[in-house]
Amino acid sequence: MAEIGKDIIHAKSLLEAGKLVGIPTETVYGLAGNALNPDAVASIFETKKRPSFDPLIIHSDSMEKIKRWVLEIPEKLKILADEFWPGPLTLLLPRESIVPDLVTSGLDRVAVRIPSHPLTLELLKSLEFPLAAPSANPFGYISPTRPEHVQKQLGDQIPYILDGGACRVGLESTIVGIEDDQIFIYRLGGLDVRDIEALVGSVQIKTHSSSNPAAPGLLESHYAPSKPFILGDLDQLIQDHKHDKKRIGILSLQRIFSNMPIESQMMLSEKGDLKEAAQNLFAAMRALDELDLDLILAERMPDQGLGKAINDRLNRAAAK
Ligand code: TXA
Ligand code: MG
Image (cartoon, rainbow, N blue to C red; front, side, top):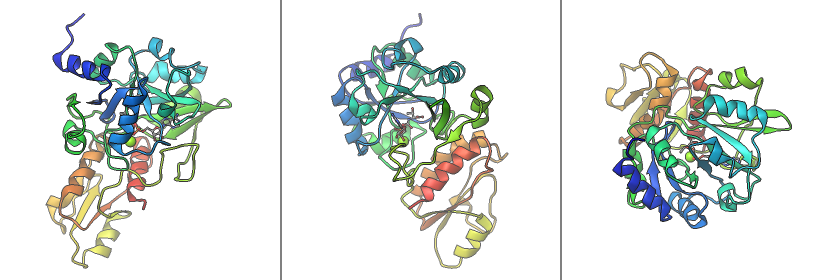
């Protein structure tokens, strides 16, 4: 076996001592702690200022370990796990009592995933416990896809960030569960829904709202920049706003508007490629949020494949 890196040994020893570490995954960076240690889990909630009704995903490196923390894996979900793990899939599975209540907010199911980032997989292999890890951003803000995003917002509060570069997927994992033999998607994410349906048949997408406790945490307003964020037809929006002397930022899939200042425009993919757009989305939203602007105008993506998940994030960023 290859020798394990110094950075991983450092992360491991902090985690074993109940401390928190920023970890790279292929989706977004996570704020990780020992999921079986209620004190570590409590400090995740505290650090993120996250309400305790919003449960956490636990991460591990193998099915063998996951079986210690769940009662069973329903057949259809097993098919998805076999296909997509390691990768941007989270499964809701009936939990063993060893998983602390705080992790699941008292729910019967625990969210589980095997991430595919090689550094984090190696770290998880070296640990006997799963890592609880929400996205490493203050609650309600844009998710981090680069180590510097984590450093900037949580760097003062955590002892270490494992640097794994920019995230390959850029959107959080797709959350899937089963109720009475029907597959539900509770959060659109890094997997294309069509790829899931090809394996297990038609799925239903459960809508989220601030008043739907069946999908806690999937709040309507989320991923929110600190500036007003308006979604719609960009030509129309620019027309509507350009005369009121406002400094305007623009987030588009693949257009640049020659009548607007170039430095406040972000294009997600010149080729209009939705995978690339997903990769760039959160970093572009952050970059615009850091400019001296009065408002940000954005357009929806084509409603297919990853475009659906990007639109979900845009809709929630725009929700009040
Ligand atoms: O890609 C990801 O999933 C990233 C990386 C770090 O793995 N993690 C992530 O975690 O996005 P977080 O905490 O930001 O979002 C997890 C979502 C929350 O909306 C939460 O409500 C939902 O998963 N969730 C967690 N456990 C649940 C459960 N037992 N039942 C229903 N929803 C659950
Ligand atoms: Mg999050």
